[in-house]
Amino acid sequence: MIKLKIYIIICLGIYSCEGKNNEVSNLTDIHENVVVLNDSTLEKSTNFRMEGIDFKFICKNGDFEIRENQPDIRRPQRLEQTLEIKYGKEVKKIELPNKNKQSYLKNGDTIYILDIPIDHFEIFKYKSQNYFELSGGGGCSSCNEYVSIYNFQGQLVYKNYYNKDSTIEYYSNPNFTNIVLKNHRKKLKKIMIE
Image (cartoon, rainbow, N blue to C red; front, top):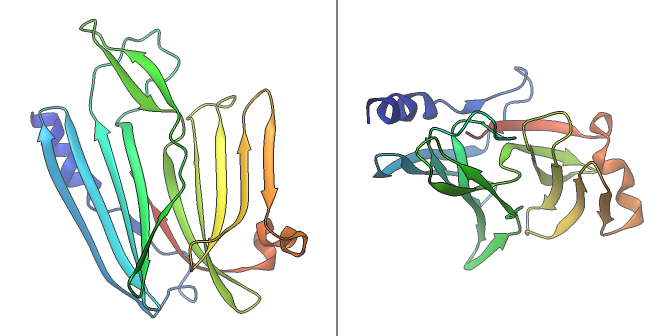
């Protein structure tokens, strides 16, 4: 239980701004809420508002002792993740990677952790429109990786899912191919999620 309390304290300082001229002046109402579900699991909610859009990212993390011979021994282990955006009265749930993989604990129990935890949330401007990018990876050089870009109405613009066997890439419009090139867009805010 002591380990979990220490983790909660570390978990609260997750926001980082990139560069003094890139801070978003209209990003408001940032709050974080951590709920301890049991001795080894907590749920963290990160909420913020920008240009009348409410963002709510919820992740359930575990702090389990994984057997050392497991391919993924990251801590904390991401068990679930959801992102909702609300504009006006409409709430939209954003599709996030939700594939699980089995891990074995030192005590012999089994848990299922997310293959790709989202750990970066970036807001940027491209051709005078605001977008957000979600990205994450499996934590090793050959693990799966994921990047998606949405407009502020929650519509998918770009998605790339990469693993060592194949890559799935999607563009909603061929004119958006430059949106993934970071030098074609102005970063407004980057949020690290743990």
